[in-house]
Length: 424
Ligand SMILES: [Mg+2]
Image (cartoon, rainbow, N blue to C red; front, side, top):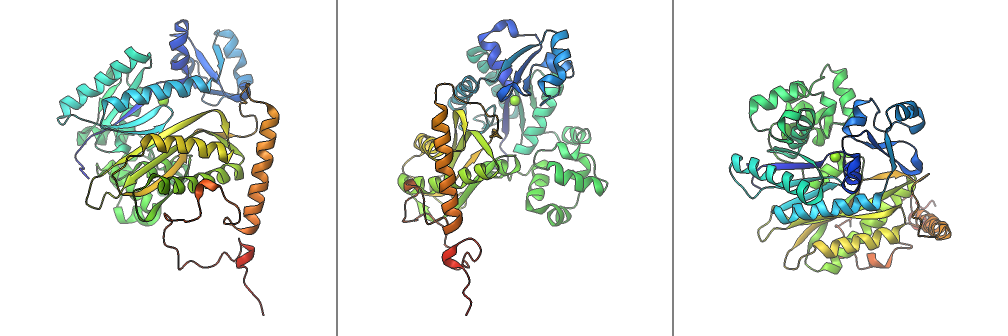
């Protein structure tokens, strides 16, 4: 891997609000808020609404007086519009850059064609202008040597209007001074738990974190903590799947026991991971608006390399495995290319919302949903009782050609009736 290349983070500004503004330009420059399903709380705000002190996630009824007083424009979330606009943003990015890693509905990492830092800066400005001209969507661009630093650069951009939405953070002095102004917990991948721990050791700023001993970080914050530290030092070591793990998303992935070249074999692995994601969603009573798929070759082996990801969106958030399977399959067909030896595949979903009160698609009958729930409940009950080989989706297949070698695995003593420990 070339560690000297630059990575950019493209982040659509107030994305849902921006999508609404495209089709209703009167909204520009006004306080605008988008409400979650059931019109419960604010999930997107224009800058003008932020300035009025309405927080992300604020329940509508609690800020009703502000809404009335300042004539705030309030809209219900229109996910089919947002996901369609997202698809357009991403396809423009994919045409412009050699590698694009879609991270969420409104964020993607880009890898540049250009080599010199001046050209990279120009490319960043150009893509920003293009997205605004072609789609009406304003974006912020943070560029650095690693994903974690590009996230930091993007934060800086958003706070400093004079940067005009593009910031290239690669000078050591700048990096240090920016990190001095950041809390450790604000660094992407550190998370609340780790931030608390660091604070208990007297480490508050990201700069203090940067100066910690690598061995200590690995010991106390695991390998993921160390990766974050290395990324802040400019050593690129996060793959998209590490990124998804760091977020509040669900990710399931595994390396294959041997390289796969056939799409149907890869599809079976994907289907297996999707069924696990479906179970995880139902277990935590949540539904997802999107499912992402990634495939890649082994970067440490010789031969042609390929990695690609895609995110498919649902108009109606779902936890119904057959719907997840169909979307993941469609995604895989878009990114799969013949002629590569695939080493790993996985699926992930972000945009997870609680199932209770999630948006219903008006064009689909309610009954249908109840039936789907019932079907999943039965499926989950059977697999919980008899193990996950008792009943599975046809698309997973039964030859398990992709599965890692697990010949030495101990029986499912507590999870599978057939493998209960015998007592004589
Ligand atoms: Mg955004």
